[in-house]
Length: 215
Image (tube, rainbow, N blue to C red; front, side):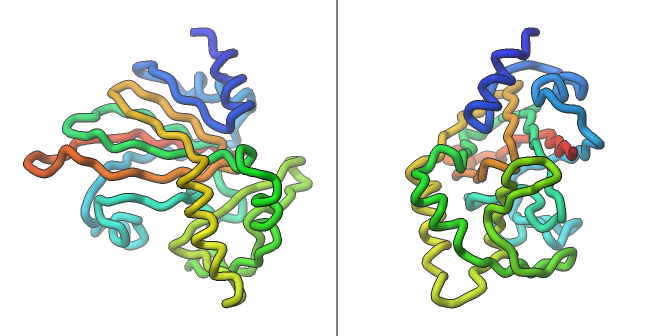
């Protein structure tokens, strides 16, 4: 498979969606065009709660929508790329929405960059900016997680609704099918989960393999 057009889309838009069954780890590196230090793999599926992981988002949002976020925003260096591979999409029409921070007006980006946020997480508690330049990697790193990040000053609480309004206006919708592959630049994009309309009388069986690639 020729990955060059896929890599170009990833670089230009911050994410890319395509179909390929049984994608391999070395192909993930080819798509990203960089060498990873390591890759963490897990499986994710919509569920009402997760007793095995007290910090799971399912324990907050159940099997409903997930708001825009960075995966593992609390880590000192979050994964650069996230790859979601749909192995099963039975009884599901739930979309994923992706927002490329480069796609929003510069004035909005600058406005958000000025806000100081407080992160409160068992692994990391500190004040930080939504966008911060990494001199090590020569690019800005975006991080946002509404479950553990709040504006540091009460006067800036408007920023939460502002992020959601930008996400609703500028995010792109991904419609899943089995074999779908979504690669996201996790330092550049926020992503979230939509509702499922097909589970009123049957069990949703959507399953993703999630690969988190670190530099």
